[in-house]
Amino acid sequence: MKEGMRDILKEYENVIYNLNCSYEFLKSREIINTEVFKKALNDCIEYLDRLLKNLSEKERRILILKFGLNGEKALSLTEIADIENLSTIKVRAIIIKALRRIENDFEKI
Image 1: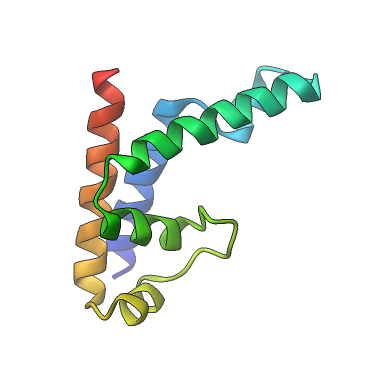
Image 2: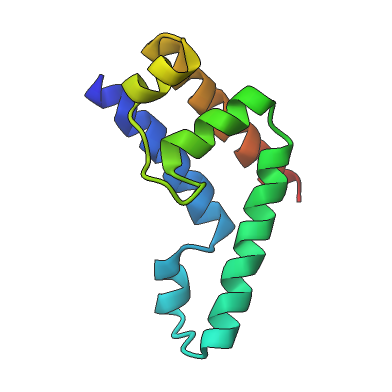
């Protein structure tokens, strides 16, 4: 199970890396002006929102729960499985599929 989580997190990190919009990326470029930072962050949020809209409702809902994209705490596979009435294996498969779709959509741009 831990190996599976590493795979999921690796997929997620690849997406974030490709988007180049993480806090560390912005910080490493010494973007000090808070207005510039807010604009860059808002652009990233809007872009991520557009990518999420290309997913099915279930995929979007599960990614939001898994990564805390709604501002709430990120949930475990087990917690999501309970909420969605699915097995943890199915939740994991949905997450991986959704992340791959996001990555493919990003590469098309």
